[in-house]
Length: 115
Image 1 (spheres, one colour):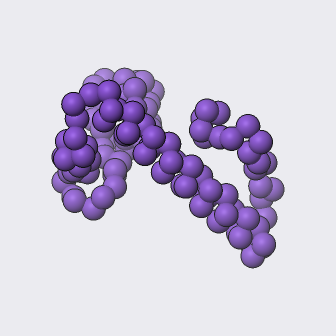
Image 2: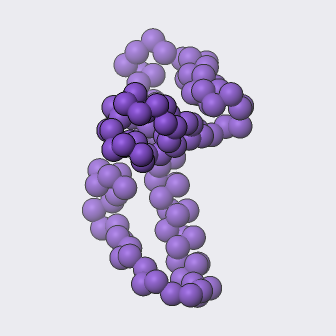
């Protein structure tokens, strides 16, 4: 998570040691950390949207329309961004969009600024 998104006194979890089965206590800690991260992201997203709305002429309807447009990029209205296939411009083979480098020839793809 970006440093500006974390409170100055935030707990930064250390990488877990590999084990066969995570303990119930460890899972509970991880769940609480994830819940905290989600709540923090919700707060920051709301603050960002309110700043944009106050400083532009955009409306909540504009925001919803853009969210729907992004949601539909994979052809499914499911409320999430889904990784899509990318065709390598060098070798023509297909890779997942979660990789920004061709798994076959090593060609680096142009990374978007966001997302």
